Amino acid sequence: MSETSLVFTGDIGFDKYMAGKWDDTDLLNTEVATFLEDCDHLCVNVEGPLLAKTADEAKGPLRHSMDPAAAGFLNRIGADVWNICTNHIMDAGAEGMENTLKLAAKCGAKTLGAGMNLAE
Image 1: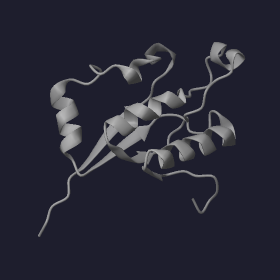
Image 2 (image 1 turned 180 degrees about the vertical axis):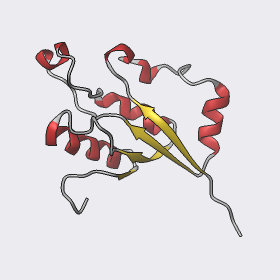
Image 3 (image 1 turned 90 degrees about the vertical axis):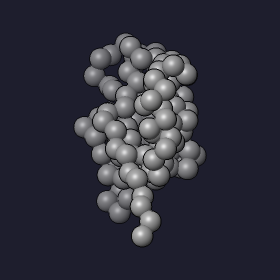
Image 4 (image 1 turned 120 degrees about the horizontal axis):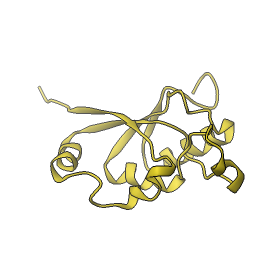
């Protein structure tokens, strides 16, 4: 019988205080990075939609979303399943949901927990 390893993360969110950190190659220590790389499937909890904010939206505190560039980090750590069923997923409305789903597909990741309609 073969075994499959599944790893689940807590919230991953790059808010205004973490802007650009997705490009920091030292963000994860070596042991954590190796642990994530060695699993068969990595399911990450994407804490909000991936959608660029307008200048006016960036000033307000009530919308939790991430720069779409953060998808590169999720792809780099091997996140092949994105849980998008979080309390912030609709903070950017349908546009945020749609963009998040497109970015997940572009990264080759499956999504679970939310979608554009009930069937998804």
